[in-house]
Image 1 (cartoon, rainbow, N blue to C red):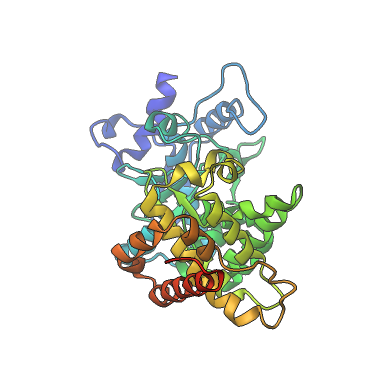
Image 2: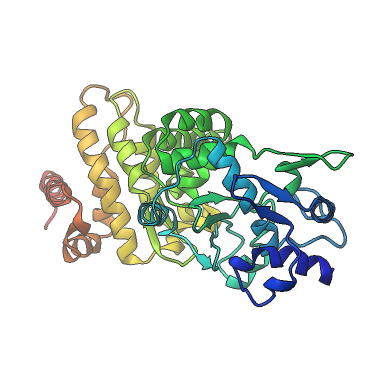
Length: 388
């Protein structure tokens, strides 16, 4: 095993360290004519070892634990195949700008050759994240420096096929090409392909990485989650609120504003599904029993008072205008007596002070929404003969 590790790692000395370069036996050698020289014997050894790795339901007694070397061995293959597929490598500055949209809400770990973007949610402890960093079924994403693309950990046998006569062919999974060409080459054709063939990855872009800029992906995720949560009890569909508001692996408060905007732009007189789901989520922020329905993502426990008020304000900023616009045209569907903000302010008047103190959380229409809701509460109090 020691000899094997040395052989694999030494090839990548230009990534890591040059101290053993003179004694290294390279597994993959790049040539000037964009060809690769393969040490087939060592590649076959790696493939054999990886067959004993944990993967989904397969859990061997003494599993092979993939590590940094299992990722590094892939880089020359993926680099060449992406180029063959017409992938255009971005400048370092532009690539880093786009990557920042993916890692802003996530834990990362930087190496000289790549950066790990942790997408797993085992727990928030670094020790646990590191333990599973390179596992094949975890689906962490790795940002490859210099060549400017992203990949998960791939089984080597899914990249290179070795025949009995030791001849070989190289072909990376098409989803690797489509993902990179969409994210970094703005290829809408590849997004079309991903929407049909790689939906789990697209949903993970939003749910795990916070990438919420593409309305078509937002639609995919929200429609899918709504149906998933709608399978059992009537209230299950309301749990979709957890994908709008969350805490990242650094425990930072996150709002998926792209999802909020999607609901704002796609609510209609005959479609208030997501508005009503968020309405329910507003109450779960402040009612312990409702919050418990959300399990580990219990909003009652997850957020502090300011964060709760912020979420309530975001939801109100799209719910209140929607009620005004659509309820007169379809009162049967828009059957709630009023907005969530109205009821919350009656029970928790301190929410108003928090919203005002934080300058309406920068929400453009929130000042008007808050004032109109308070006026509505005051009018109703007068009608009931209550004191202010």
